[in-house]
Length: 192
Length: 192
DNA sequence: TGTACATCAGTGAACGCGCGTTCACTGATGTAC
DNA sequence: TGTACATCAGTGAACGCGCGTTCACTGATGTAC
Image (cartoon, rainbow over all chains, first blue to last red; front, side):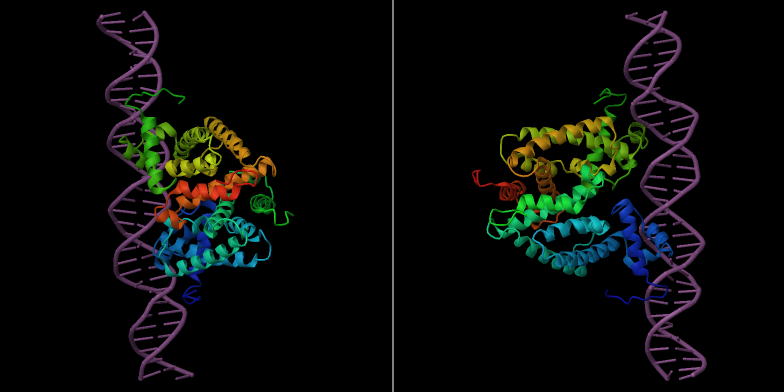
C-alpha cells in the first residue's frame, strides 16, 4: 500500500501479514507472539517489531486490509436481494482471520487513518445494502442495525462452532439465505 | 457445586473464579495467566493450577456457571413478547465475562458433563422462547436460528464497541427492543 | 561508466521478566480408638 | 473428652523456557560527483 513493495530482503511486510493471518486462523487474534510471526515468515525475530512496532500495529494492518476486502465482497454481491447478507456471512467464513479482528476495535488502533478510511468505505457499502432490504418500514438506522446484527450473529455463531450445523459440515450459504429470507421477506415481495 | 464449599484456607474455588471473571472483564478470555489469577485471589501462585489444572479448566467452570445464570435470566423474562431477546442482550451486557466465554467452545472443554448439562438447559429455554416469536411461519429451526443470530449479533457488536450507540452511552435495552420489534412484528400482532 | 558515501531494512547476541510446572513441605481437618 | 494419625488443600522455592526489547552491526540500494 503506502510503502514500496520490494525491500532489502524480499517483501517483509507482506510476509509478516501472511504469517499473522495464518497464526490468527490457528490460535485467534491474540494467541501468538511477534517472535512466532518471525519464525513463520522466516525472518529474524526482531523484524516484525521493526516494521509494525508491536502486535497492535500488526492487527491494525490486518483490520485495514480486511475492511478493503470486505467492501469489495459486499459490492460484488449487489444484485441478489439477500446477497449482501449472504456475502457478509461468506466473507466471515472465507476470510475468518480478518473477520475475527475487524469488529473488535479494542484489538487495534481505531484511530489509524488508513484503517479508518477502509472501515468507513465498508460501512457505507453495508448501509446501502441494508437499506434495500426493507424500504418502507422502520427507520433506516434500525433496519441497518437489524440486518447487520442478524448477519453478524449468524456468522459469529457459525465460526465459533456454536451451531450444530457448522460442526456437522452443513452448507453455510444455504442456511444463511434461509434465515435472511425468513426475517426480511415482506408480503409485497416475492417470497421465493 | 460438586465439591464442598469451605476448604482449608477459605473458599479457593470461588476466589479463583471471581478473579478469572474480573480478569476476563479487563483483558478478555485469554489475556491473563494462572499466576495473575493467584495474585488477584491473594493465594499462592500454584493454587489455581492445583484446583483447576489449567486455564481451560478455569474457563470450563466459567462457562458452566454462565449457562446456569443465562438460563435463569431467560426464564425470568418469559412474559414480555420480545423479553427473551432483550434478556439475551441484557445478559451479555450485565455478565460480559461469562458471555465472552460461553459461545466459544474452543476455549473450554466442551465435553465437561457439568458444563454440557448447563448448556443443554439454556439451549432448551432459548428454543422455547424463540418458538413464541413467530408461531406460524418458517421452520422452528430457522426461526430459532434467526432470533438467536439477531440477539447474539446485536450483543456482540454492542460489546465489541462496533456500534456508535454503545460508544456514546446509549440505552442498550431500548435499542435492542426496537430492533427486535422491527424484525419480529407481524401483521396479526399489535405493533406497539 | 566508476567510485565513494549515506541511508536504512533487517540481523543476531544479550538482557531481564513472567510464565507453567515440579516437588518437598506445612498445617488444618476429620477419623480411630 | 483426649491423643495419635492419615488426608490433602494449599505453599513456596527452584527450574527451564519463550517473550519483548535493546543495540551495535551488516550489507544492499540509491545518490553525488
